[in-house]
Length: 319
Image 1 (cartoon, rainbow, N blue to C red):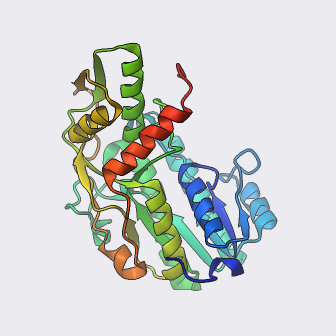
Image 2: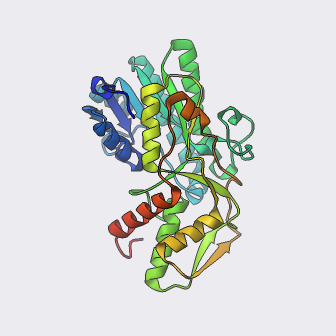
Image 3: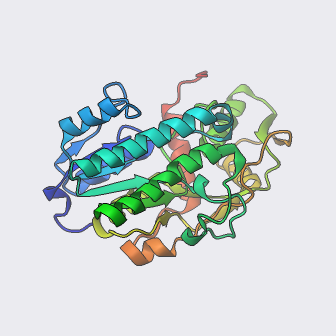
């Protein structure tokens, strides 16, 4: 569990705190006794702009920054917006770390991405393999932009003694995820497709790729817990994976979600569409060793909760 009293003494700024992962991080901060939590909203602060970053730091005056804000999406969104994904994520992170150092922020928690790993990384991905090749092409601009925050964190630690840590969460899923088919990741997209096909009485659902790639997923509450444990207990230069240690093929995933949603039609694989990275699974031993984190929520249980949430909150006919 959390360090007793750690959060009561700190002012914490959570960028992206109104988003999917951020909303769970903020809830857990409150449960841990944090009283002074600042969540900058994009309507007030565009963190790609230096002046907005400076104004946000003036307004929040944090000791700790947990930088979750990112411009993200699935394979389709990455293919359509590679320049935006590169520029926005790089400029947000690089300027925010620099300004945080200038102002004497005590700790900066930078969130990377599993997309930073080379396309053909040996499975399970070990943090030491991060630099052994180029990322998978469909999300390389995003992955490399986020990876630069690791370089910056280590450089600022080396030269200035700045306490910036870098975490690499695997793909997250759970309640409050993005279910917009134009930009969502695979789990929410499949949940929505199957439920809408069920409602419309469609006898088949089309899915991108051939189903062969494997992925690891972590339930969003587990990811939030890992990030907060690292913030409390970890003060090192090494990047650290945040994952569940569970790998599943996209084909098996689709069949599992079809079963859990009750969809009984046919799954049609569109092999003209890209598969993305061939395999993705993390070595999670460093997180357990450095700050005692291990994911708790079984995959099928997490999927059930996500499906229930979507059924309860969706607007029929949206999109």
